[in-house]
Amino acid sequence: MEHLEFYKLKEHPFSNTVDNRYFYNNAQHAQALIRLKYAVDAMKGLAVVVGGVGTGKTTLARRMLNELEEDKYEAALLVVIHTSVTTDWLMKKIAFQIGIENVGETKLDILGQIYKRFVEIHAAGRKTVILMDEVQMLQSREIMEEFRGLLNMESPDGKLITLVLFGLPELEDVLALDEPLKQRVAVKYKLTGLDENITREYIRHRLKVAGCDEDIFTPEAVTAVHHYTKGVPRLINTVCDNAIFEGFLLRANPVGKEIIDAVSSSLDLNG
Image 1 (cartoon, rainbow, N blue to C red):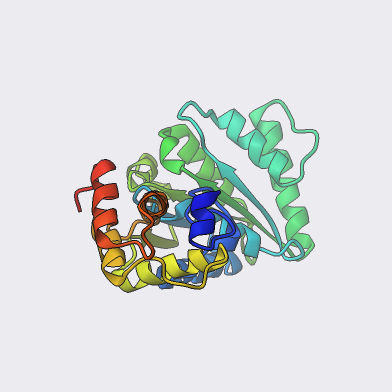
Image 2: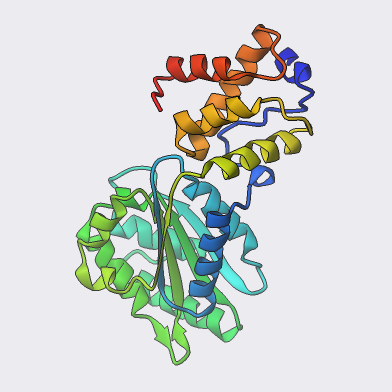
C-alpha cells in the first residue's frame, strides 16, 4: 500500500491482531511472565492477571503459551467468547485440550478422565497448565466451584494443574462468587498502561519489526500519543495506525503532534 511505502514500511506495524513478532517485552509484561512461570513451576495452582481493556492480557497469554515448552508442559489456552458457557462445556473443553480423545458424557466420568490424565502427565515429569482469557465473562458460582474442584487434585509434590486466569478488573468479582477459590489465588498481577518512555520504545519496536528503522513520529507526536491513550497498547496501535495514514495523505514525514491531535479527536480520545 502506498502509505506503507511512503514511510518505508513492509507491513502494517500497528495492527491489533495478536502477532508474537510484535510482542514488546516491556518491564511489566516481563515481571508478569516471571511471576506466572513461578506459579506454574512451583505448582501453586491458581494465578490471576487482571487489566483494563487493551492493556495486553491476550498478548501476554499467548506469549506465555509459546514459552511453555511441550517437553515440560501440557499447556492449552482457552478463550471465553460468551457468558453462557456451562460447566459441562468447560470441563469437556479442558479434557479435550489436555489430550483426552473420547471425552465422557457425565460430569463424574469427565472428572475421572481429567484426574487420570493429570496423573499421567505428572508421572511423565511434565506439568499441566490451563490458560484462560476473558474469564470475567464466566459469571457463574458453579464454574468457580468446578475450578476449585480441579485445584483439589493434588500429588505429594503439589497441585496437578495450574490455572492461569486473565480478565478485566471485574474478574475479581467473579472469583468472589466462590470465596474459598478466591483465597487460593497464589499469584496475582495487575497490568496498567505504559509510561511515556516505554510508549516511545513500544512504537519504535513495532516500526522496526515492520521494516522501518527511522522515527517517523516526532518526539512531540509520541508525547501526544501517550497523552491521549494513557499508554494502553491497543489504543496506541489505533492512534498510530490512523496517524500513519493521515500523515501520508498530508505527505508529512515525520508525523507531527497536530496529526495525533486530529486523529485522537476523531476517535473521541480526550486525554
